[in-house]
Length: 196
Length: 180
Image (tube, rainbow over all chains, first blue to last red; front, side, top):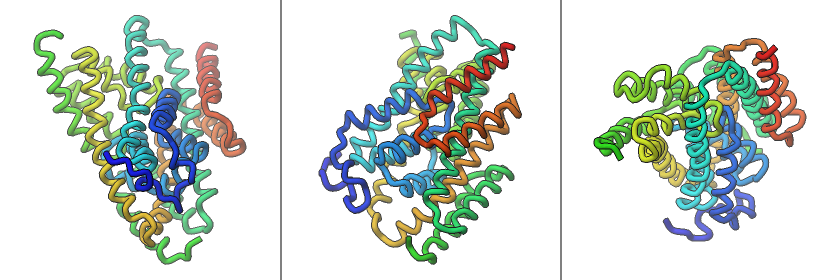
């Protein structure tokens, strides 16, 4: 992969600091994220760490990638990791981010599996899993609500969010067709509305 | 390596690599297919083992579909774990990489910006829907709902709060309730 220093970073868009981020730094950040993102919901963990904390990728770019990514195969967290890595350092960045994200959990689950083979399942473990799940749901809700708060100047985006929740969350319609129908509507409205 | 491990590695690749490219809709869609293939079709693990592996992958950090590492380990040791994991993640990742390169080329155009502004509220809706879907599956019912809402309010009120202590607190609290 080529490593033109100017190519992967758009200076007018990305924060200036991203130009100097080293591959080990990228690997390390995603490694830490992989080792600490308990209970699934990796998109919410990524959003918190990469958008809010490190500012490695713009809020809007991340959210668009997440929604558009629904029409691509694969786990959300993996797709977003590749995208952020690519955004930071092109091909090598994407590889560093992906290996960083997966290597920790890979080692951990094999260790957990080995321990489990000796110990067996306990009801207490199930209760703890429920507690973890509840907190991760809270993180996911806070991420969704927070991004509406920050990113949306008008009633229209809020309405789009509400329609999405109604279709996918409440009526449980299949996600891919819902996104394929709502996306052109929402993009068309964004075109028609004046820019912020 | 036992005899026939080479064939098993090939079989792991042949099952998980196509899933990598066909798993639309995130982890849950992948999990259903993984279960079907590794339990019913190939008999790599029993139903009971699959359920246990699933619970373990939820307790461990990282993507929920990492349970394929355990399936690979069970049938072909470390090589099996590596092949299963790489097969499940790499093909999809390469596809996404290509797509995001093409996408990045149009950065700055008016429609690129409109797409980003238009898709953001849908993504927010997907986050909220994902949370609702997990709450539906949660066996503990109202207690999980209440804890989720408390966490939501806390994280919105104090965005700097790190979720890890909250996770520990949630796990401890639910274990305590179960023990009493």
